[in-house]
Image 1 (cartoon, rainbow, N blue to C red):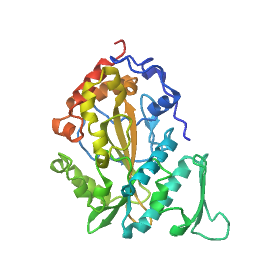
Image 2: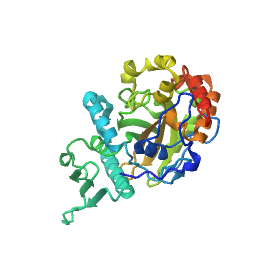
Image 3: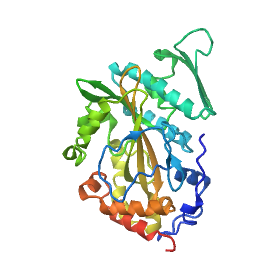
Image 4: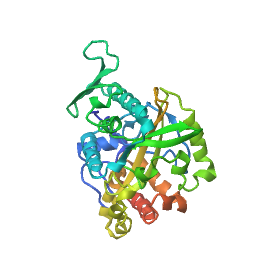
Length: 360
């Protein structure tokens, strides 16, 4: 498992001194999550943009760094994969591969295994033609973190325990959406999405890229979605890009899909009645690191969504993050706050962060 980089002590508050008297000393697990957290804000003002950049370069932060690999593995690896497996058992509709996407599913499998093996060679290995028989389509995958050794023949579903896209989703923490490009448009025709943030993959599968993003305010008016669509259509193999997106979530809940709204929706009202300590513990900054990869064999686009959660009480231990997040929330327009589902508590979140400064 990847060891998170050391946390520079000079940029962290020595103890969380929030108005809610946040948590006591952080555990090594929590420190690792903070050190690898992809803090998304580059200014005190946030508006929608395509905000894409080449992937695979490390981004230093006041707490550590993130982004060195396309497919990251962290201290939550086993727990998140176990959660994904449980969700898929309860709701198989989170996984779909339309018939014409079979080749893209295999293309995704091999592409992501190569990324994992390159980023984590001490724990993961991918070997071609392991028996040395000259079988170019024969592979062996070894994942020490999960205790998995799997030999398979590329393109032959019978050599895997399950459908190839479902199988690779059991090796990576990222949700996966595959976009087919045809008739000058992109179509979300396959995927495994278990950690959706207030949307439903089961509802969206088969829809066009422009239809999927239709409900987001301002995107069409600002031309953002059209530019993103054109950019994606020009993606080239072996030139992955990435972007970040964010919202707030109540509780450390990865699965806030539309399907489960009756479970998590009432939290948006509940949070108004909790005390300050509970508020800082429950409200999380939720960040998605989204990678965009043109698959080399099928020419489909692999859209990876990796979700990170950090409670405000831990976010506030990095003073630069505390102040910037407060500023972004204070400046966020009403329609954007409403679409993100945070309008009922974003003002309190900003005030909480302002009050959580050192010496308070």
